[in-house]
Image 1: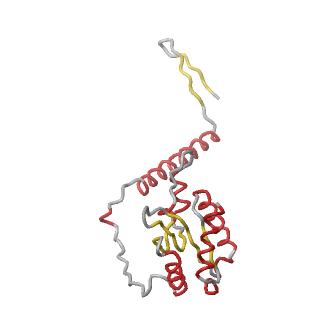
Image 2: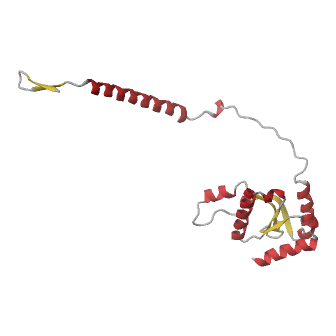
Image 3: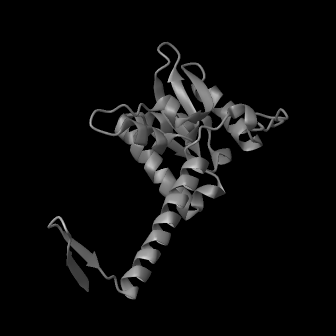
Length: 193
């Protein structure tokens, strides 16, 4: 509804009569707008403020030295590796993949590729004593390598080493191996590539 009135100076005055439904709708929209603006303000206050690091209490963790660097099995295998290959190679135990594999390959997302290998390791890496170039990666497969998720991880690690041109040699039941058999496995792995 609306009302038109002619004023003395010839102008028209238009008055609108707003129905109660429209007034209620406008009030609801007003309240919704106030809630949204308030919520936005609260969000900005809570999440966009820079946190003063002095205000955050930092936890100081304590550590003890481990009694042994490797497990008993890993130590025994290490000694056997050293007898077989120690004259030609430095043996680095528990080597992180990021120390052996370079993620900076043209055409891929380097950050994502690094995240893919970060935190993964192999039991040993054998590096040439003259150049320190990684020549072999070695995995000592225990019972955990029979789990499905571990097998998937193992397949992916094998794929990465194969792609990088470094043989990954796996050993299980190392106690029944002779030094000659171990040496043969390394020779075969190098010549199969």
